Amino acid sequence: MLAPIENLVRNLGRLPGLGRRSAGRAALALVREPERLLEPLVLALRDAQTNVCACARCGAFTVRGEDPCALCTDATRDGGVVCVVEEAADVVTIESSGAFRGRYHVLAGKLSPVRHCGPDKLRIAELKDRIAREGFGEVLLALSTDMEGDATAGYLVETLREFPSTNAPVKVTRLAFGLPADSGVAYSDPLTLRRAIVHRCPA
Image (cartoon, rainbow, N blue to C red; front, side, top):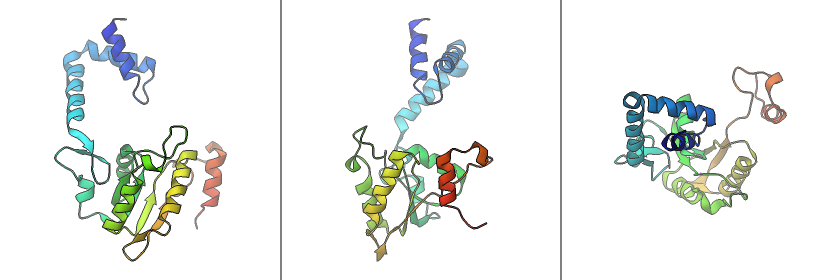
């Protein structure tokens, strides 16, 4: 394979969901139709590189010149609750559900001794500052349910347990655990089933 195409395949293969074969097919399609596929992609990548940045307040994606982002400045959103997520991409996912209308705060990671990521590496101090300044009454933890996500949630619960929000301690909640939509007991792993039973709700 030609070196430029091999380089393209290698870089495409670094993207989530693209294995070596998928990256190879995508690369060949791009070089086969440069005007229709390759050039618009190059322009889009350059535009994203130049204009997309993190909101200085919440950490979600925004564009230069719009900071704080639209989610932070939208007066119709509930300013009493903030949803804490690990990465900016999680904000996009939650927004697509249409189920949450409050504010967001991106931690930029999760606690991980293996990756040498402690509390000082996360945007926890910024979260506490926002709670004190913006007066959130509830902090909703929308973190992953793996060991590191659970450790991060536990740390935040302890850290914020007595933290004041206006005149009262902030309420800390977490996303409910349960079975995936359009699924069933037979297709669920034991940990998911255990969490679904522990956090069961009235019918």
